[in-house]
Length: 423
Ligand code: RNT
Ligand code: ZN
Image (cartoon, rainbow, N blue to C red):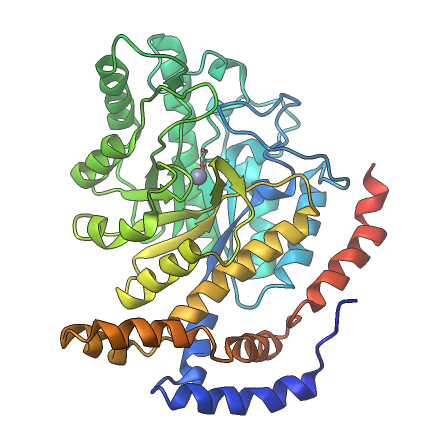
């Protein structure tokens, strides 16, 4: 049985929690106020297993969505309906990260010819929701990506096609930013790489650099639009070599003043992005995160409140980086209810930020500065026992969204009323 929360006990528990935290010098009211201002960019592609609407092709590009849970969105209207429901279950005002392959063209327009008008319904929807939008070029699940190479291809025609796509995406992102009055970040990720040992690691990287130089040649007003580039270590079918590695894009981002995108699943399994944030932000202005959860590999499992997610939240808060780091999500699980996947992952991401905002930072810093590592460790461990759940529930109710697990019933109901009619 899943217990329901009740507003009275949430109201009763909060003042007590506030007092417990106050004893550590932490102001819970301020923490939830700050949390309310953080926008997470929800990825449209959890809603339909990275399918998109511009073709019926299988997902390609070395990423894989597994599972066949019923009720997947089949049209843009269905996906928007699912997002409406999901956004109503998450405290705060967030954003939508849309992939180019979700264009509403009826499949009649190829990716290099996409125009802002093909996203008019999405922009109207976002305006209605009062949210901003981010964008992503789609360099996979397309006949011209079948050889595994796009912007780094040795075929000039293929390269040109994807350069045109990337440029079209920049214009679309700029349009979104202007229309919605909120800076739009356009992230570029390409799958280019090789299954087995390359003889030449250099030439594809030179070609990629040249393609990017062409793509980014035109400057766009940074108050409405920014470019991000996403690195990767390996993919399915690109186990031995990925052209757009971390070093490649970090260097390119520094040299060209672009936003770097760090995906939590794009590094060696014991390597964590939480430790990279404070280093890369010494050399670049802004970061985009793809918050994800790899299980043994870049499996894009639904994000949970793991140690690493908590460490990411801590870094953003402790380093005072919240205004320089854009938090986006990137996971896709087709084995569970897709709205629940979004809800669990986004709520977990927000919880990690709340926990970080509830840290007695001054005290921890003082222990560290005085070399009292014993107290630092003891305090960090004790903090896990404080009534964080009471603060979270209170925040959810104050934001008029379900507390506790109450959202689950709503999703089950939606599954009965809406999703079950889809199969
Ligand atoms: C792939 C990258 C990329 C994609 C999305 C769909 O490994 O993480 O961000 O997941 O663009
Ligand atoms: Zn990603």
